[in-house]
Image (tube, rainbow, N blue to C red; front, side, top):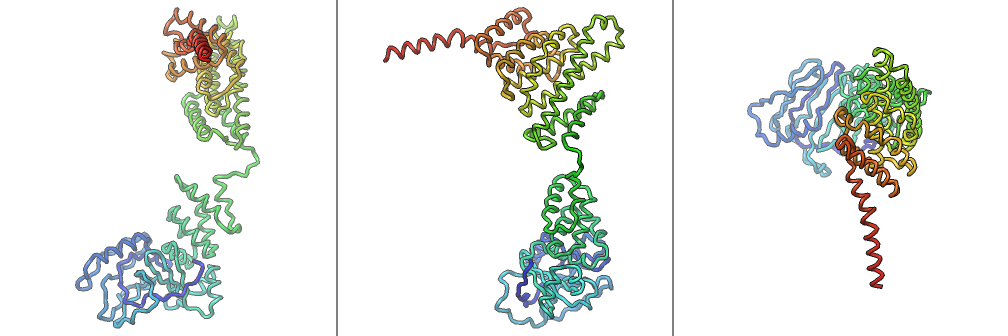
Length: 525
């Protein structure tokens, strides 16, 4: 686009086509889109010659004022006449009419048929420069412009004009976006470019921004940036805006106001903001808002489990673990209060807030455990939970309605271990089963019938797999204890038959199978 290319316009008789023309108050023409140009050319190739000079109806233009469309009749046998138009419409010129005796076809003619359009700006009688744009599909646009306007507003044209003195024509080959190129040149004739952009769309302004930078048109670039800073971005527009603004070559445009919408220069570290959000959610007592924000924050963190708001997984885990520790301390204090001998004698109005707070803290711990498990960072939380012997000891002294969410935390950790979402040590796994399996079994019947989110099959598979990760002697101790409970209460206890079956094969079948295999191998040798 930046280079001149000497090539003569097709000197043959030009077919004058119907082209939507829009005249703005400033007097410049808004070029139709490439699709319109292609469709117009295609329709004309298919239709026969019109009769009696009749013209098809004009297409609607998107600008403020619309001039009459140009006749599509081919005039090769008579001198064309200029249609009568008012003073406002005189600023928009039709394509060059064919002469009565067209000159012979030049040797260096472009092989592709050209569709020519002429555009005029400002006071046409004062124009002293022709700019010819060669676009795609053979579209050629000739603009009648003024040297002083282009040189004053565009460093690109100022350079071309200064190199060729005198200069009457500038050609721009391989123009990628003829439509926007014409509109951007037209904006050089506007006293208030920003006002002209108000009703434009974000994608179109981005196209104008690109061409304005190529032309070295700083006033237009600044107006585009002002527009982008103020207008809302919808959907994918945000990425396109950020990419386009960051790709600006010059650093003199002050692009930071646009990018401040997606990047902050505040001194407050992002981890402090993240910590504040977590704290607000954990301390909320409004059920709906609390539930919805927990779901939203968990979803946002899960979208990219390898990074956090601060850009560092360690900082994110640090905040989450600090919240876990605070919730555990609060929960233990509440358990002690609720199991105190004097508490039983208190009125219901005093008991209910305590039980509700227990449920909230347990729900907080379950939410934090879910986040950490999703991020494969729950090993330390498992150690913290397995070491809560006092909390587990007080568990049976509370009503199951108030304590069952504590067992949900235990169940979630078993599921995470069974799925390989975390890899706690053997001692931690054994301690977790020793401290929390019985409280979970005590609450199992309630969990099945009173907790909608409880998935019995997933939990039982997680418990069984966790047990099977221990040494065989520990598997035997835990599973025999489970068997005694299962034979007493049945479905009110986790069904660990699959784990029991695996342990049985390991204990009673594998040793003899291996022994028989060794004997057979010895006999063959």
